[in-house]
Image 1 (cartoon, rainbow, N blue to C red):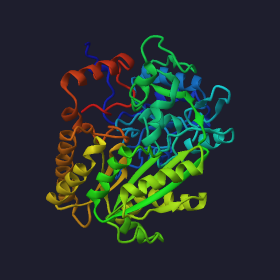
Image 2 (tube, one colour):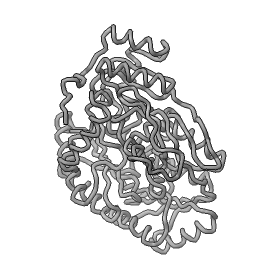
Image 3 (cartoon, helix red, strand yellow):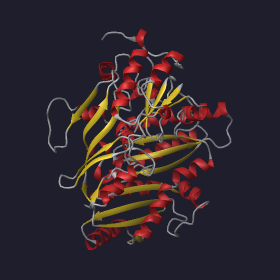
Image 4 (cartoon, helix red, strand yellow):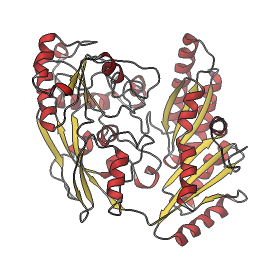
Length: 471
């Protein structure tokens, strides 16, 4: 493999006045800024305490403008960090080398909704929740639902292969991506895949770009697969007297023959933090753990029969049943506010751990063991139906140096346990900037070398989202 390190961007890359002047000729004046407030906003995401301001921010409004910017960046050998709504939790969209932050939020058109073929072509800057609402008006459903779906953008979801509660039944974003429009580092525009349900024309570049975290190309539009909107939904809640019992119960759900659309777990500490700011149902109060399940299907009768089967599995635990939309929204609001409640309580480090479902109880034990050994508190919650828990290591009152040492020690021990259980370093947040140090523990040198060669083939100058994923 040729070494192009001499052409790679330097740390904290700045824009010369001449380079900025050349860039300004490619975009409207309102689409380029070096304003301090803009640089600050685009230098952070939802990852705790990270700040990497770019040298400039660009807001292209068309694929042609994106291509022009990338041709300019290649000529200048300057780093470009593609960005969506910056809702990520692994620092994946942070301009750690300075340079240009390339925001896709103005590529915000739904180009075509094909009801007959149940597909939609959408630009990268469309808000996920707004896309879901648009297709729902035609009785269609786009299931991927990150917690930030009311603000996150489709392009970012694709770049991170985002997931959410309903990936339990429907899978992550990649399962719904049929084709992509993307701009390479060179400025060339490529189209991968198609709107066809079957297409094996050459390498599957579509799925290679999904989850590539903006390191291979700038995704500007996508053709997505849709399904019919479920006719009926039912939400159930089960309280348990131990977190391990709740974790084991997850496997029992699927062994019963019931396939939930969502299966979420929250432990007592998460419930306690929520209770400080929310009025919780009595069924949650005092529980050591709580499982939230959503069932969907053709009829309410069908779902009630499935609920009865689960009631037998979990007896004598009495379920909390939410049949009407208002009651269901209330339960889902409780689940969606856990992250906010944790963040309001303490600084924290979130480990996005995923293991086979059968190892969920062991993961919970490992999380508590790692946190306790480091003198920290842990709070576990998340997508139990996928074996994917968000394990929050809380700082509490520790001073900065003690916190950093304890946090890193706990995370390292926890990741070791995750890998021993057959799990992976990240379930849905991506590797980005924060998880890079663990990659050599999860992947073999040969696998990492192959990935680096893919990166160089797409981006020989190393200007696209540098210093992400690879250690």
